[in-house]
Length: 343
Image (cartoon, rainbow, N blue to C red; front, top):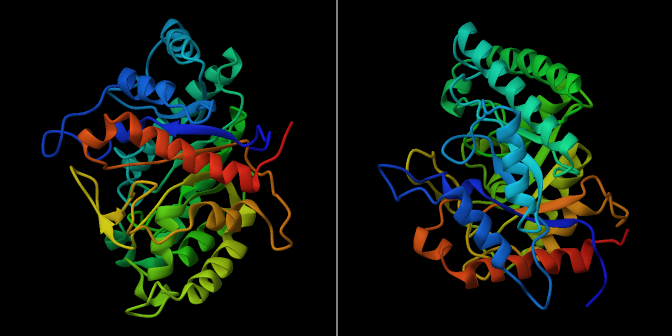
């Protein structure tokens, strides 16, 4: 085993909430998600940290400084750091009313403020503030040009807010968000905002769905009925997509996908997050991660200091199994072995 210690290996805590709730399964507490992360170990290697969602019931976005300190102490007491955080901006869809956009930017500012405090305490050495448009592709499609104009104007304001707190925003590349539902609309959004304080969050499960054209068939890259036994077409599509989006990528989720969509609870259908060792998974996790982590010359970009596993909408029974987190940690280690470095 090599001695690479970067990128750091993180687990996400929000899968304890996302896709859970009254119409699905009970929410898994923040403490339990932390403990599951801290308990995992593969050949002496453990998770370095967690990426967290700044929303109830895991985190109170409006907590005072004492609350922030308690959060930092709770995480660090388990030998973990905090990386990227998710801003809870869904109460104010960008493609809603003017008042909605005020709510969106207010929630974003609160998130940047809390993220900065965690950084200043020392528990958060790196990471971004994750956002999306909080708006559906269906709403976006009613007026694509008008929708893009509103999204770009709002995200320019958002980027200025982030700059004021010394933070960077990463737009989640997920098919359920208007203006971000295909690799081309995502690229157009990033290029139009054109701010050093807004980048892209690539998730291997979600970006695989980009190549299949879900929610934007015109931007499909793989042919209908694609035979996954022939990897050459997939690799070519992956290269084209990553060459376009990699320069914007400042946050990265390792994941597996079986080329289907899935939703649970109140979450819209999106790229299915499969277990790392799912036999139906279409990704060669360690190899395909390299398309994001290395440039067109094969050199490491080192554009982010940690990578994170996002396993949303796994059944609770699966998430309570220690073997689940060990397998996920093993997948992250395989990525670092192949595309990591030492500092």
